[in-house]
Amino acid sequence: MTLVTRGGSAALLALAVLLGGCYPLRGMRAVPAEQVSLSPPPGQAAVVFMRSTGGSISTSLFELREPPDRFIGILVADTRLMHLVAPGRTRFMLVGGSASFLDADLVAGKTYHVGIAQGDLGEGQFALRPLRSDDLQRREWRQCSASCVWIENTERSQEWARRQSSSIQRKKERDLPKWERRADRPALNATDGR
Image (cartoon, rainbow, N blue to C red; front, side, top):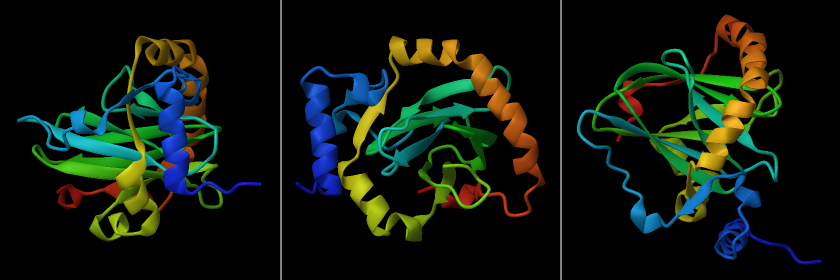
């Protein structure tokens, strides 16, 4: 039996993608790190979603600012993606077996980080977590910042979101009222941007 480190796991994922296997990325496409800029264009904010845990189960991300909900992408373990968004207040939704939410107050010209982490009791398997400066220094997020594969949408991932829209909407309708009743709802604050 061979153990693979997190960095080794990301390297194996990248190798599988380079050899032509898109299945591990659930229709998303790998992007070379040198092609990703963490600085948003003028008038926009950037949000980096990172996922370092969770095996082969996929999670999909949405922005809920206005109908229809905007599909951001699909994350699997050891992946991350950049999402450009208009500044101001918005809400993000993560869907796996259940839905998780995160409110955000974003400032133009700033870059924010959000982690997809194991959910706490009552949250479901995965949850969105705002990552502040101190959080980004934790081993898990430092490793992901160094080695998680950058990904972006493709027509295949967009088509998946269209086909799954009724299932996703049902999870949103079921889980959003419970989340809104929570007193300890996580939020990404304007000052969390760098």
